[in-house]
Length: 231
Ligand code: DC
Image 1: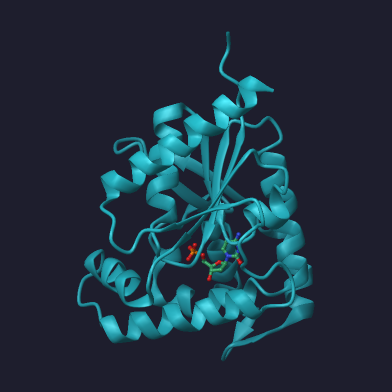
Image 2: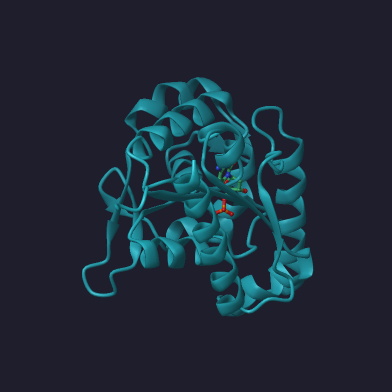
């Protein structure tokens, strides 16, 4: 019997290892992986580079005119095989992870037309199932019918330490402040605020190794498949 292909939504706070676990799961089970945060980051980079944001203020008219000109795609790096984000055909994987983008992404991701455009692109990417997507509103707004929903948390300090370990010359206090600010903005924004879907399984991975969380997730995947096969 063929194993059913499902939709897997992984939501949670910023920098809590969602993409690490989502990527590994997708690799092991042969699913597409989409980092929805990278899409919000790419739109933010476009806004910063094209005068749509100045001094932290968004020009909504300019954004409305620009939104259809922003094309976001993903492709594997030819040597490492790692998935990278492209903005209008240019690889922006490094640039979208800088503090410059991190500091403005929360205000861009609050804008209704940005969310509408990206949610419909995300739904199109997942229309054939067999997808793992991570973000903030995947289980609540993008794929409310996902067969497996995970909500990941970890303390702000642990998250800042993990992010700092990936950077050179990192100021850990500044990173923690940025994380706390983004948590607050993600949870309090009007459209699709970050919240755990009622049917999501919660994981606090503050004290887990990457291997432990990968194992935990594959178990949840197996249980979801077993549930469906029994129906
Ligand atoms: O996962 P990340 O830190 O790369 O996400 C960057 C920002 O994008 C985050 O501050 C909130 C926003 N985001 C969102 O609003 N909805 C999503 N589905 C994913 C990310």
